[in-house]
Every structure is written in structure tokens, then in C-alpha cells.
Length: 262
Ligand SMILES: [Fe+2]
Ligand SMILES: [Fe+2]
Image (cartoon, rainbow, N blue to C red; front, top):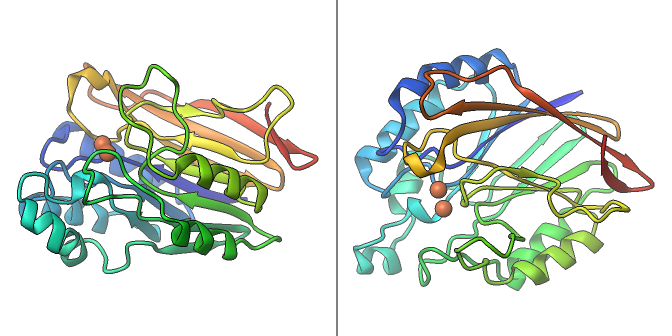
């Protein structure tokens, strides 16, 4: 079995401080093979916020990879955003914006979907898509991890990332098995599976620590991969509770290359 923990949208600078220790206890207690953080490590990309994010990440004992989110680049300082958007991210978190994690039978390709020209929306370029599919390894579970979701329900009020539809189609026919994303602060797993299943499973993480009350809850997920079976342990902390509830377990199974619930 390979265990991956998916954290997203930490938003240091606007985080629920009382949840930091319970989150670290659960993350370290899970003894994961890899922790994947899909962006928005900070709330406004400030140096002090990156320092807090870095201190938090350093306390995670498992190997860890992260990709930036739109909140990790300057919003108001336009010159900084255009000229050196990742300066603080690189100083505090990692120089590599598209890291690779490879543990057991699971390979995770990070992609940087942030677009400094369009702060909220995000973009995947054809070159990024190509790099991701060229890295697919047939004998692995191939995961792409990025901040912006590749598909959204129509009621979502944020614009879908540029390139999302092309990337999704390409990933799907090129052997990407699973996509991890964040950004919406709305959890969903397998939301876009067709009744007959789909070769690519999408897991959209909620926010692990953001204190925005409209988000209603914080959460993260532990993913256990064993052959063609995936068990997701979803840990939720409602905003008015001080810790995480016992996890809900959601299962998916692959048959004939297609993911299905169960
Ligand atoms: Fe976020
Ligand atoms: Fe975001």
C-alpha cells in the first residue's frame, strides 16, 4: 500500500491557528509515504506568511512536495507580480515549482497552474501539458497535482482555468490516472465520473486551514492506494469545532482501467 496525504489551501496569514497542532498530529500520525500540497500556502504571498508556512511544512515528517497557488504570488504589487512572481515562494518553500514525487507504485507530477497575468484564473500551457503526459509511466499510478481544478460544476463562480478542458482530455487519453487540485475550497472526489466510470479520477481538496467562515469547514485527505483500490480518509473540522472529526472513508475501485465508486 502507498499512502499519500493531500493538503491544499493552507492560507497562512489567515489560518485557523487552533487547528495547526491537530492537523500536524494527524498528518504525522498517518506516516504517509508522501505529502502533496496543492497551492495557496499563504493568504497574500507576504514574506511573514511564507515564514509561517515554511515553519509548518518543516514539522511534517513525511517527504513533501508542493506547487504554488494564486495566493502565493503578489496580488496588489503589479510590478512584482509580473517581474518576479515566485521570489518569496522560492525563497521559503522550494525553488522547483513543478516537483515530482515518486513513492512505491505512485508517481506525482506537480504542475504550476498560476498565471501572473490573470491572478485568479490560472493556466496550463501546451508545453506543461506535454511535459506531464511525457512523464507518464505505464506501470505506475500517475497523479498530476496542481492548484486549479480541471473541471467545475456550473454553479461555481470562478472562471475555469485556461487550458483546463484541453489538458483534461489529453491527460485522460495519455494515461494520467488521477488529478489532485484545490483552489475552490470545496471538496469533491469522483464528482465527474460517468456512470460507466472514467479512466481519470479527480479529487478536489477543500481548505486545510483557511479561516474564512464561508468555507464552513477545514479538511484534508489521506489516500491509500493498493493495486486497483483507493481508500480516501476524509478528515473534516467544522469551523465551530476545535479539532478534526473521525474520518469518513470513501472508496474507489478500478475495473478495466475505469474508476468507479465502491
Ligand atoms: Fe485558496
Ligand atoms: Fe486559489
